Figure 1 (cartoon, rainbow, N blue to C red):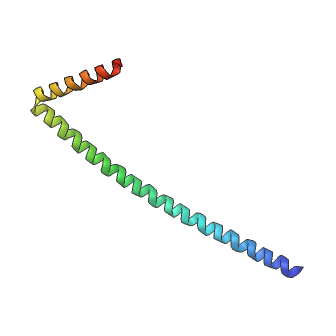
Figure 2 (tube, one colour):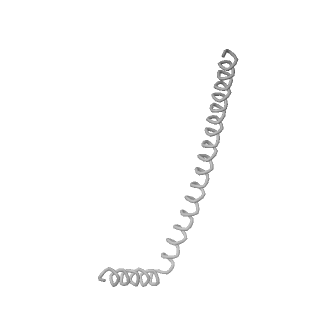
Figure 3 (cartoon, rainbow, N blue to C red):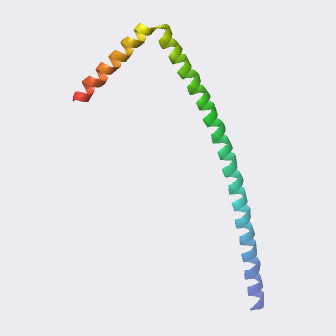
Length: 83
């Protein structure tokens, strides 16, 4: 019986070591994903800021077209919201 208890203890120790290693790997993967998502968020933020500046500059350069576009969009929203 002592042989089986020794093997059970060895197996339990091995399983615990594997669980600890897996937790460590999951922690590393989580940190990598966090860094990657942070980089992607910063990139999306830069692109959105650039597009917003472009839209603002275009609106300033073409105020009549911008006003017509906004009026048309408001008209369409008004027509669709009545139904």
